[in-house]
Image (cartoon, rainbow, N blue to C red; front, side):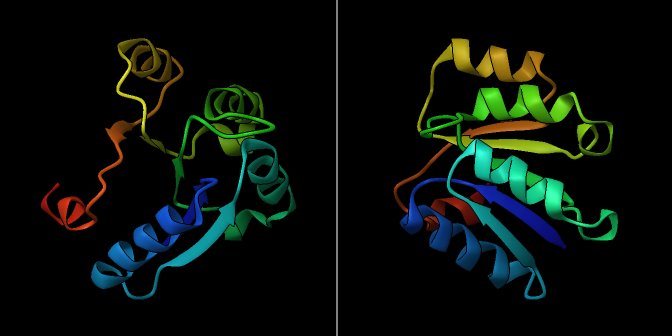
Length: 119
């Protein structure tokens, strides 16, 4: 499994990697600290190396998660990659905006990574 993590918090990145590797030990991670880095990374990957899904934060500098979604939906080879939002925002507005843009899932970050194993 290949995953693109677009997240600006290194502690969160390490926690997600630890959690996923515990269940899926062969996972390959690509990481980007903002939407622009994520878009650049995708653009430079060969088709065979594209991620199986994108785990995306909303609140990031330079290019936020919403802007990132809008941009990758414009590019055919990226438009079908499933996107899961992983954010601190529990705002109904953010949730509905993301769902309108076609994200597959939306969940609010937990402080305790043990909570992720329950979900």
